[in-house]
Image 1: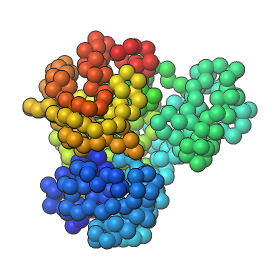
Image 2 (image 1 turned 45 degrees about the vertical axis):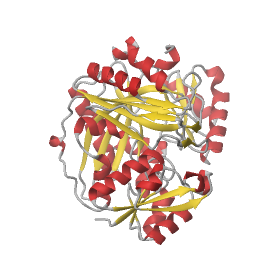
Image 3 (image 1 turned 180 degrees about the horizontal axis):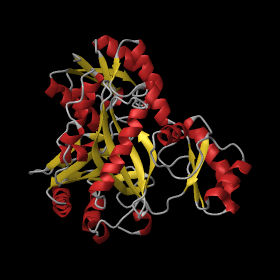
Length: 445
């Protein structure tokens, strides 16, 4: 097992990993930018090292500075958390070259599953269903016209290296195809450094359902059930829950088996997530694989009792999984609300000083946050300042518990998305489980 792990991240995920390290008897090293010196992860880690100025490119994305910090601290492993360098294949290779274990998948895993065209090719060979479309980059309008006519409108153009809605264009008719293709390629080049795009059939009212998987270096792969992440705004998840309100045990088994097959196809040996679009008729289609820990992993931990971060560390150390598929049982229902420092009406960032802070408590309530009273939320980084997770016997009880916890969660001095989540917990359609990824585009909450 590792003797010291450097966490190449900040905020709540850095705290989550530090706590796992403490429970496992592993020393932890925090890195921070010069404006993050008062951050909670800095004070809770066993050691801390400043790696650069405020801009992420000069600190949390600065590979040379992070590797140097690991060498100075004599850390034998680096955990990247999510975001930043967590899916950077070059960084994983540099860690390996420097004799430092990267706690995550291999660089080959990241390249094969991080590129969406390559991922479609890989999972298709593994027997995982995908939406009709192309498994190669579209270069010309003639190619685009042919595939669009073959599969029928509406279609969606996606950047092969994309994410978060960038380089993505929905096309409803031939008249807008040429302009959409050109715009998608331009956005892809600007956002990801490559203009490769592909086309697939547009699924108009899907749910976003993802399967958590765990793999080890001995060829074992299991899944931990699903999460429903359909409540989104601008392709950004806001609320996640487990299990999915509409999934049957049979469908869960089928989607889980496909996720395991996809992971085994690339010899995956870490925590990861296979994401699907679930149509109203029960058909599901591979969307992408996230080769890292997810923001929403706590809801899965709450319903399975599996500590995903510890399992991720164990797998990186070469230990076999402690669980077999038959050991995984889904118990009760969990919901997570992402708490952002944003105007709840406009969803625009609202950094500033927290002048009052009180967290909810009670059985089945979990807070993942690096906030505290008098802390200043910085404008330099992502606006998510915490996650509120609840667990109860039923979905109805979980919604009620979340409503109570949100009422008790006090953050003064800045605006947050707590009021939005309070409205969602009172929304009848959400309570009935009647929603899809377009819910917030249709419904005023």
